[in-house]
Image (tube, rainbow, N blue to C red):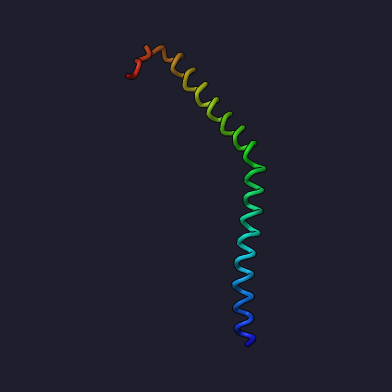
Amino acid sequence: MVHRVMQRVDVVLDQRLREAIATVVQEQTRSVLPRLREEIESVVRHAVYEAVADELASGAPSVPKG
C-alpha cells in the first residue's frame, strides 16, 4: 500500500511541479521580453549603421539587387 501511495504522490507532484515551473518561466519570460526587444533593436541598428558606414567609406558604387 505504501508503494502505491508513493506512486500516486509521485505522479501528482510531477504534474503540479511541471505546472508551477511553467508558470514561473512564463512570467519571467514576459518580464524580460521588453528589455530583450530593446537590446535586439539596438544591436540591429548598430550593425546596420556600421555596415552603411563601411560601405560609404569604401567608396564602392552600390549595385542594386533585383
